[in-house]
Length: 484
Image (cartoon, rainbow, N blue to C red; front, side, top):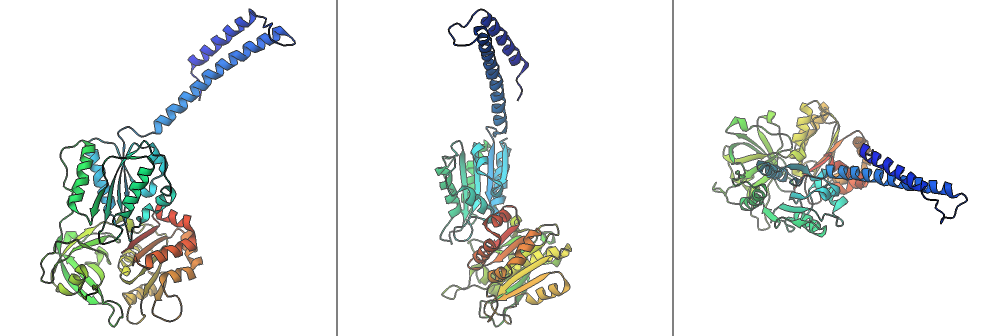
């Protein structure tokens, strides 16, 4: 940094004064070979010190101004989301919108793009986070959890709020939200209000969060955050896909909306089904979610649903309604939810698709969408039980492979002797090919069982590619999962 002209002028003035002062004194008390030379040297030294102090002060002031310029504004609010199926992202966007309606400056950020340094410079932050599986962080939060949450950070100037989304059917309800809150507290941050838990989208809990946000924004009227109403869709088809299987019956379903304008979604999106009793009466219980197995160009919304039974033989709430109780031709309560975290890239980079069982639904839609764009660098690794009885859409997949829509097709049968038993085993056996695809820019999509398959595939990928690269792929959207 340069000193100001005023500072330079003052420095020169001091130098002249010191020179005059030196001429009036012989510095006789100092030990020197030549008193006159020593006096002049001392004078010049004092003058240089004076100039240095002024220049250093100017530089320090300039640096201080630079630091202040990058610090957040006092009323800045960070809104951070960690989402597995898109619901947390949706609520974070609504939170940011409500804050902005009160003229609060907001920065909406995916947790994958968050660093401890950003939080250290922030004064206020709201976190909207989900929990997936048995207490796991969403995939886009994995890198942040590894990099930042293993130990406390210096966040003493931060005030925060946490909205934790979860499902009480799981033992570790809202676990990631609680882990995040504990880490923030240990890092010296202070809560704006108590953590808000939301069970399966409970509207009462969401209104509680909305009330806190409204107080922060200063607005007195609050928008309606109710979830979109179900729309009637007609069940057009129900077809058994695995006759003779040792596993549960698996069905292909096709539904069409009464309102044709609703035939709109992106591959990777999720459908929510409002279940009913066997008699057809609505059930006041949580909705059930399924991966969409088709694209709008198919003219219908396709699902792949396995019939589930409790230990006492009772049919599962959602699967029982869809696979047995609802008659073909009946109206089904449906709403489609955007799941941006499982959308495919629009460019022609290669892609690796890995799944098992009903996970073929989400992968089928993604591959259909890519083939429609002419993107054929698709490698599918799909696993089921038996090659004869469990050919869930396998005939179709083999046809796509023959036509060139799927570049590579690896089918893995867990009940067949010899070869790889599970999809994660096949990945390890093809480790060099996995590395080659990823080096060419491939994204990895995993869909299917959370128990066994998903953690097994994750472990295989980390073994093949390394921890840091897998975390980087997740943070940059090249490793995406729809697991349940």
